[in-house]
Length: 373
Image (cartoon, rainbow, N blue to C red):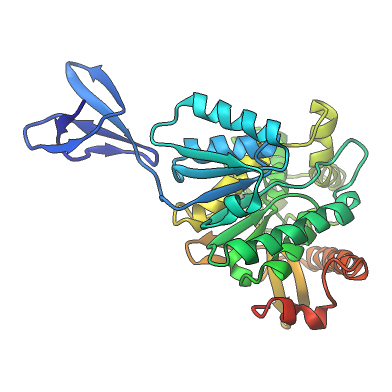
């Protein structure tokens, strides 16, 4: 059935509300509601029609990413990829049964089908942490998965626009993916924002304010036990943290809680985080698609003589937009910058470990595998 309606008068990111009036265009409605005797027709609007691939879609993070991407209206064209057929099949069925208007979903266990034609990819396709494990404990197995992931990108979708890697240890799996994929550094990011949002949450609860009233609460460096927690730029409802009478002992407790944020979720829920990483990863890819800019810290490739950080993926002050990821120099006290240096050195050790394992070549040969780095 078709209705004649006037052009859009009210809009949100994912939905248009159109008001029947006297000047007409023709559209196909997907939902109709009545308000004060005026007919409103709901039509799904997407940010892009480009193909988005969710790797690891059969898991908890992956399935949440699919749902978040559809609810935020990123693109109707989403491919669910996982090596475990029953899991990804089940997620596909559930998403289809949500009946998202205009959605064009598919699922597969075949990497060629999944990656061919992809413009955007988010991967949670590694093993999750279990209680008692650190992110670093996952290094060997997940970096082998990351190497294969990068090879598939190079083989099947070399023209992909942006890739987000979120499986741990994310700094090193993302670096492995970048080396194997042949992508430019600004085309690939890793999830790091959760550490900052956990710090923001802890400070908001400490001072009894709404969470978004805490600004500048950021962590940089590695997404792991050696992350650098910065306090000097934090404001609480516009007031510098230094003026909030927070004791050194309490600050150390908050820092520890932030660093152990992922472990705390495992203890509370019996499994690793899935809702928060899924949402933040989708917001990252939304920014790369040309949506709202993503300004929380993201892991990015850093090779900067001025900073003294070379050949690593690490969280920095970043912005992700349609042109990719861009970083600036962190601002902090000497103590904070020393902490960042230690975090960088820890990342270098993990990088050197995957070189020794033969997962990536030595640094001087990276350019042979990826001419863009």
